[in-house]
Image (cartoon, rainbow, N blue to C red):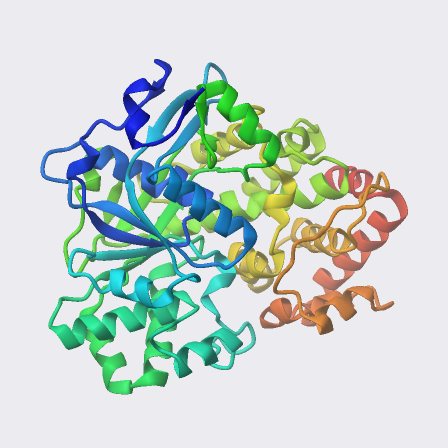
Length: 493
């Protein structure tokens, strides 16, 4: 195998595409905070294509690691040793995978090891966009009040130690303060997370943090920094240890940090950048004045359907998404959910017909080559459920629509929190934002107690007897018969 690095690009196997540009000429113009698999299979891919265009070599990526964990430290070491290079294998539903080396990440810093240096790099005039993928739960918004949590321990640390920040908000604000003091124009802050109005939420978080330091400085940020919203889409599974060997065998490249994804990819961006942007429209990115319609469709159809399939999938004993999708009961649940509970409530942009999008989604979920894990879809459900299902739940309650499938989803979520599937196999629910009080409600003998969980309080579900009755019914059916027989009964009603 060829060991991956800048000096070995010419020796790559013929089946692996290499960057179509001279990387020695590329300079970082974008800094990306938290360089996860999704970023490397999505935004970095678009930029890799963009760098091959004339006069775009100032738009390479400076990767910035943010989370201090053994896995993130290993990834930082891998990317640094490989000169920022990694392989991407794209698997279509049918046919052979396409393999390439992505070269758009031209530098990488691990902020937990040297936060002061990370601030210096973000303050560099060359950086004109700071993008981020920090997950739906990463914006530090209090679920009860909707306000930015200034009392979170890492935020308290960053306010007291502004030059050695731990959080993305501390990094962004410290860098903007340096730029303002030096007369350097600010950068655009671009959230790429699965949140509706993600630009507005990023703006709220950054301004709240900056205001706690200096309200005048926060006002300057509000007047000068752009926070465009965007919608991102590509199914990118977690890379398990076994996947590393499998992907390297496929490419013939010794890569410490390979990624893989489906062949579908989409990026819709609000065209509001305060300090320039790359010509991404030339490589398939859609720029628009309003991304709201695209955001709603993605969150309420794709992301919500991921949750709808993941609980019966995981609790029913399926570990992989395509296995769950091969169960006709789960396939019918998703189609019915989208047809009856989601599509009638959406206003679609003209270039995104919903029936066609639904069929594309079902085919993407069923792709057996992806090996996407139900555990990835269920992880951090406490953050995902309000974001992905919130508006659908509100519309259902306000319009007195059929609540059964939404109640079934929440009953499945509660069952999933037990950590044992219907075959008796244990699994670990990954719920970093599940509070002890909410866990106690899951264990409460009152079957409707979980409807009082913090994340569900804004919906006041206990004020809706029809929803409560359906939720109680599904909890009992799942407990007595198992989640898949309970689903089968739901589909027959």
